Image (cartoon, each protein chain N blue to C red):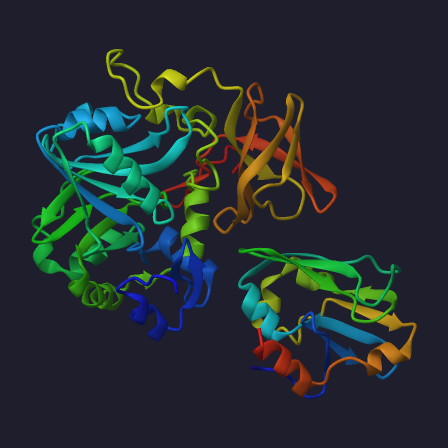
Length: 127
Length: 359
């Protein structure tokens, strides 16, 4: 399983990368894209939306099924990756390059509570 | 514990992703459902469909029995090997199953039924057979492989050169017996090809020979998107015991020409108030089954929906009120939003090509 050690993860299979300016970049894990199969459509949140940690804020649809994506932490959506909307298959090709959206977090405690790579690997393997 | 086909180990060795399908462990894909879909539209792919059940029907009353049991009329089968698609109805007109009948002689037929309905079909057929001089025999000793695509037949002949003189030169919906195999020019994809039934002991070898000839293993995921593009119903999803064939786009399979033929369900067939139509999603998104459809004539529901890999957009089958017409714009509720869709006449794709007028 491909679970980069420099990222954090949510139980709901998002990966979270902390940027130098404190903002968080979010995508779905390699395990998640593998489970979903060929991804054909994404619905992403609008920039400026305020989200709560755990709130549904995007949808990834594969040929098989639709899957909700959750905001891993509370904050403001500050950027959305329109390139993946044009090329949904890029999420299958490299789940860690194909980010979905960025959040400016409002509560640093939530980031600290996210899973590290070892803990996420256990979650994914137990499914 | 789920049932497994004789090809299960072959699928597992190929790293297929295995899922539960009607109580069977079946491959949903071998890596990419999209690539498998395109392999069938553009070249040749194969599916393990051994979970479906073949039932041999033998006896002096075989034809009268089928004319009572089925909504389509087996009397029109006169050429040995000819196949017929039919619904098997309840007395109230609900669809027990859809199936294919192969004719060999007026006293010998084969019926192929869906996996998920096999048990209830068998019980129902046994019950109806009591009044007839017929014998029904389950053929779980047979595996079934569907080889589909524009190059499917050529690759089948390449894999089994000795079959060629027997297994060519016959039309669609026709089958031949070759040794212990039944080779039928039928399928569930909208492409040319064969569906073969062969002894379990030969299945793994045949699968490998076909793969060596360039036929791509395909899972049930691609089978579903292919049949949906081809406008073919899936039992349990697009129709079941609660709807009639006339409300399921299957009126063409109900043969009422012989007014003396009293097939089960005939008396209950009334003028339908709903119809099964195709939908093309206009807005971005993906249609799925059981979404609400809003039309000028009232509400309906999608029965099957998916992304169409050939058309690169979402399509669906939907049951809507009679009066909704091809070309009408309707709305489909997806996650609390109403998206625009257009009513279309299935099939959407045949023989690798889009049938949409706008393309």
